Amino acid sequence: MPNHAADHVILSGCSGGGKSTLLLELARRGFATVPEPGRRIVAEERRGDGKALPWVDMEAFARRALALAAQDRAMVAGHTGWVFFDRGLIDAAVALHHAAGVPPAETLADTPRFHREVFLTPPWPEIYHADAERQHDISEAEAEHQRLLTAYEALGYETVILPKTGVQARAGFLLSRLG
Image (cartoon, rainbow, N blue to C red; front, side, top):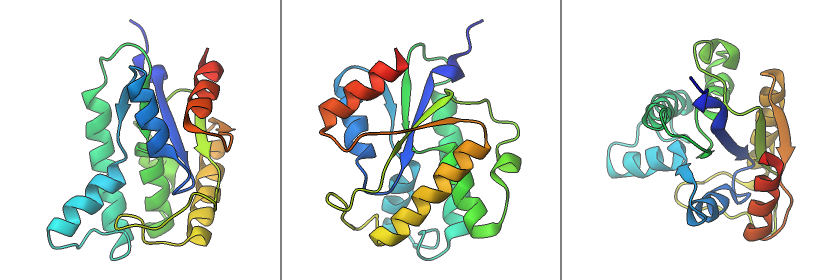
């Protein structure tokens, strides 16, 4: 039986670096995509009591992101071909580590691995902007990017920094890396 989890590709990196825009381009090109859990949680929390907003309770937010990301992955488990995730399980595990000290390797112990290459958006101040779902500034986004880069490498993934180019060129770069 083929290992479909190896076809699960993570887009991670700096907040505001263009991950969601790249995900939309990949979907436009016909690939299966999974949106970022964090933005969905923030939108839901803003409609509710707001107790799991990342700027209110980062640990609660990270635990919700882990649960949602696990559901997302289960929903695409049988899909054949590339599936692109805007953040997901590993990013949520890194957030939990940052908030509560739980090591990502412990959180992810029973999780099938993703594709060996993880594509990270670098800090890109020229396009960064805060919004209702992203309330931190660029320096916090840069610190998050460094935590993610360190964690992915510690977990044995090959990190590929995406170029600061237009979305079509970025998608072309990523797809050429995947073959």
